Image (cartoon, rainbow, N blue to C red; front, side):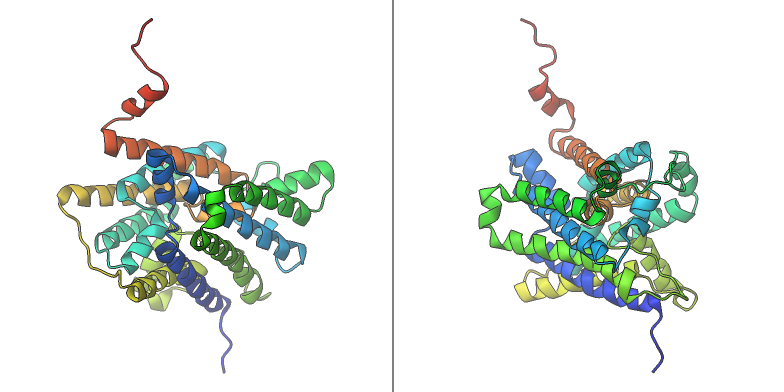
Length: 362
């Protein structure tokens, strides 16, 4: 029997892990924009804390793999070749605003497709094409104009655990574990989260799945003669890669991200069918279609410029404790905050007046 190529092994692992993430999206309501909406519009931070707990679980498992010598997390591009602060912030703001127009992120778009949402297919196509064009096509000129470096300027590993090691001498794996436990403690300080078994299970599943991505590409797909890059889940460039693979299968190679894209759709579809929630949906009018298309363009460009999306930076890079992760998460939150208020109030001025009452004189 012919041995599987590293790319094929990685794609199969991506398929399996993606199915778990698709299940988490539909069963556990694991959605970035949903969490931001709850917090911005209802003042409920429960799902944001669930997201934070998933990061903590992922970081604990990731640095356990690093400490055991199974992977070298410093080899991931989130730590070895980080984007600049400016590019991270601009890209994430654009991504967050586009996410608010669509109603979800790239990962959520795939989960919606699995539930029968036909308008999400349009978003998927537009976002995938834009992401690919931004990485390798005409959009790359604009992206590079934002000052994205080829590698960290001082050649250091751009992660908080490695920073602690440089200043204190504490082993990287221990530093990463301590930071992750502190984050988990903060998230679990919420009684509402501790009592929500579904959210707790979902957070643990997602965190372990992110760590599985590192294990799959760093161990299972390892081949000294055919190196495969260390990566985990992200859903910006892989959407474009999946489209290219479908169109040029005989001239393209399987990748982890391609398997992950298919896995999320399959996992979400199986979950919705079991729950009997599957139903075909389409855009109500041309206005909604415009929002879906524009949001797809913004997410495709923003996700590549920021070196990752809500999952790529918000979970995978965060599990590696990369410098870029909190910057991108804050940018996505602010971009979504602006977009949500534009959609709800027609302007960002109305909510700003509640914080800073302009025009009032005493």
